[in-house]
Length: 348
Image (cartoon, rainbow, N blue to C red; front, top):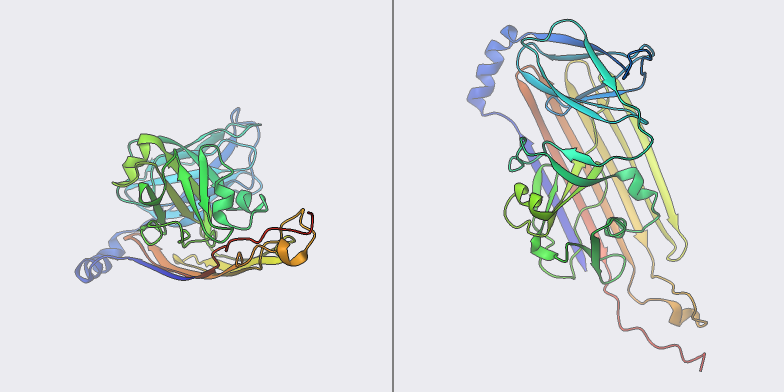
């Protein structure tokens, strides 16, 4: 069974609005927003804190003295997120028209993982005024589970199960509901190509995503109709810091099906507001080998093999007049449907 998925999303203003904004862009000056991040008492400066603005697609990091500088529009409100290992993540809205002097951010240390609250989401239907308690897992945490597929990793979370015809095909079950009772969002758009029967996988991998958020209960209806059982939101990975270029590669192997899973990517951001991300990955799993059966041929779960090739690209520009970006995601999956397994007669 072969499944192809291509998702394209383009955010931009109309030509008239674009030309108008360009004509007045000299009047829309930018400013350097500066601040310092310390602990709760203000005695210790915190280096390495990520400062991210989802509205502007801009990110930076504090220096050795806990200071940071971010280029932002001169007026308006922007949202800033502060995150650092060992400290509770913070989020605040800054009014640039009244902001003066350096911001002073104080972060609280934590020794345990606290529940996260989603205040906004990459979909227009999610109310920014209704905080919702959700389950949130980073892509790195899901890779560390050692599972061969994304749905397998999700099913390890409390309240989430899966319907599966093998490792290659799986559908999440939230609060006892699945199929078209669960809403899926990736790259800011809703996915609707995988909900109809148990022979179709989700059609999306963890490629290019930073976190995966699961919303369950009545709160999921904030994401729109159809999310009676819950919703799964794939959050894009953060852009590179201004003026930096990053590259990475990941590779994992599986012994019981002789499989591999790997991806490579590069992302960068320039001081003039231009940013980009390119990532490609491949997954190839052979037939699953079951334990406790002496005959090697009978131990093989016939047609349980699966594979996937995926790629994504994002390019955009962040200026004082707003953010415009183009996102493309491609997935080509080949999944086998497990056949009726023969019985092992060698033990009798």
